[in-house]
Length: 188
Image (cartoon, rainbow, N blue to C red; front, side, top):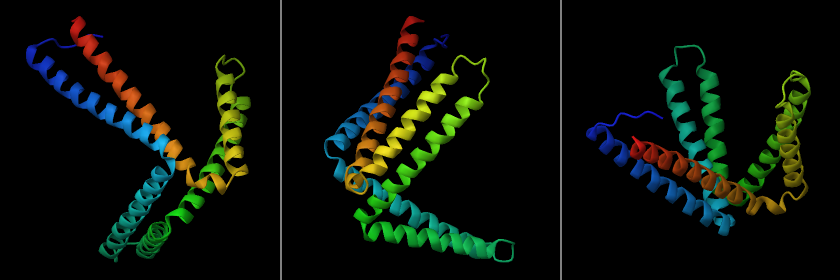
């Protein structure tokens, strides 16, 4: 990797990578905490989804009134109301929201797994990596079936566990990128 080695550029890269390294460590620590106490992580995640839906609904509602003379007012109004209702329902009963989101997650995994398995057979026979799509599809399908099989009992910890795993992988990949960038800077 060829990097600009001027002292100003090196200082900027060191400063930027320091922030990325700090962020990646925070993500890894949060991921470990989420895995250790997945019920709390699930509740926090469902709460965040609720607030996102509520804010998105309010924005859609406001935008629909701003575009009243323009086509699509009623659709925007309806979508905004649905988002607000979904957000309020999630925020008013976080545990029921966790149960619902876990069922949605299982459904998505099952559908994704089936589609990836189909795609692996539809892929060109000459592709030597099409088996990876098949394996990914089978694993995703099996995970979806496992989630659905133990639903709703797994609803209170599963989302938190998945969020924790995701945070750890995100933090690890950011840390790898930042350290590789610093290493390339030192080598130049």
